[in-house]
Image (cartoon, rainbow, N blue to C red):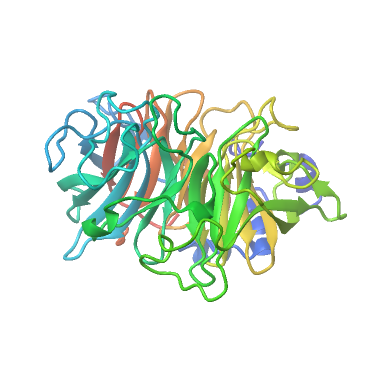
Length: 459
């Protein structure tokens, strides 16, 4: 047990991992590039990682390290939308974009699974509604350079359970529905379980919303776009059986860009699920099987024939011998030459238990490497969810844990450190402003977005 991060003693004795470098070792093997982490790959940190202990907030809202402060950007039921009415509830995944003239534009998911008519839903505005029977969606928020809110308005409405998503290289937000709800149930008039695109700069592009059917219909979490190939990686948070990691490959001649995904037909490109094999060539049925940091798997991609899941959920169309599953596949983030993928935890529904895995898929090598393993039963750093790569090195993880929740960082050397904490609901959507001055993050319920500032420095 090292800093509440599990590394097997056998691995340490064998010299495969150092006490301060196991994530670094995994990264080197996978070709991982953690933004801003080059210095840490050559020198050991001179002091404890992070920014020191968290100080209790006298207001009882958000505990932060010394020198840091926060402001509330939006709050469900209290702050106001531009068209009138309160900010919707259940803040979740968030995308951040540089605002022309300075500041940040954010697209904030609202993970509302109840039907239309629920309290503090995303309001149904003309031209922005996909399903009149659904209450979820996204709002667009503009802030100044220090995170002060300037305006908030509806980006899309009438979707359901908008959980996570991902930014695109052409500066739009892909929002995923974490549901497989069919039309006719719970008052819904249309099928759900899709990805939708929201343009934070062109409201006209958001009118008459339509799902990107080529990306499949299932319980979507996050997604990440390869800026070179246009491939899109998508996580699935589902059980019975556990979910899958998917990759969508564009059709021949496809050119990524604004409006390109909306123009796709429902069967365009190839949607496929990950299949892993270990060093001996043996099939890996579930990612929880990996109990050593640095474990590397070869990856193949198995096509999904019925991506609309007309008769059977996409994750059920292949058996455990054909695909590799994982419990609670949550955040993912493109970084350099591949994608980071989070498995939040694994319990009795999986072959092995853990309280969090962070994987890196090297797209050029078709290799998946375990970079971080959190020991089951720990609460300070447990059950990571949304992820973002930090401009100061390493990654930031939002926590959906057993105790108080918050944000914690992990350096490129593999050392976790606390960054924010509050009692109550899970944290979601950590993302930095383009200049690195502001870290935006949410408490999901009832829904609050914070702008956190302070003496940021390289880990």
